[in-house]
Length: 294
Image (cartoon, rainbow, N blue to C red):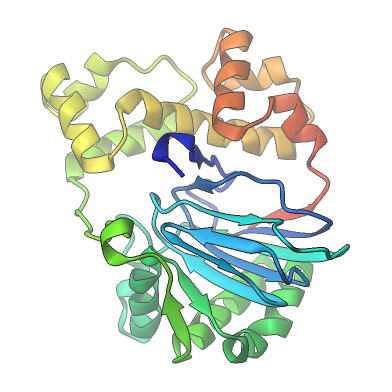
């Protein structure tokens, strides 16, 4: 699979959110190969015969499958293959704490979780014995109404998995490109500004001034530190907010387009479909799963 064919998923998880839960039953896998900025723990049951691809690793899964992925560039997908199940159960947990620029898991009590997250940059698959230790907590997570308790249960799941010695890396080290570059304070300052003012016209000159750099130098500097062009990064931020509005509001697509900084709805629809694989209206219409943002 060529990198140009990989969909970069825009998730509804925003900076102030802790956890995104998608708990659904379905008859087939349809989502294309993709990657995303946030961390993900994905659980699948009753899908024996399906094929899972993570980076350069491809294998057939059994009745239960649990994978942790913490790299924004590592593509992955679950495909139907020889799975004939009529009731595939999939629970996707996405979280962005403990990631880039966040020292949450640097505290001593989280040492084992931190080490697991680092290893999971290559994709980490857990054997059945580990899955059974967290099975009931995974199954009940979407039913917890108290946000604090839900996050605590999720942390307990991570801690349990971190102490299991039966996990294995999926992608090869070279393919996953696991070297980490510390983000520049200049880049973080610009990212914070974009997150606050994404709905306005963001000009390269103004963002370069925030970093105290020339426009040309800043553009190169930003891409070197993030792996993305400035324009692509801004699009991803805006569409992240757009998906959130499509889920949580009844605002029209044109209103959401305007509120996310796009005065041209045709341009918004085109960008959304290119990034998400469907139109904004289709995304909203297909949202018939249990999805919770905490």
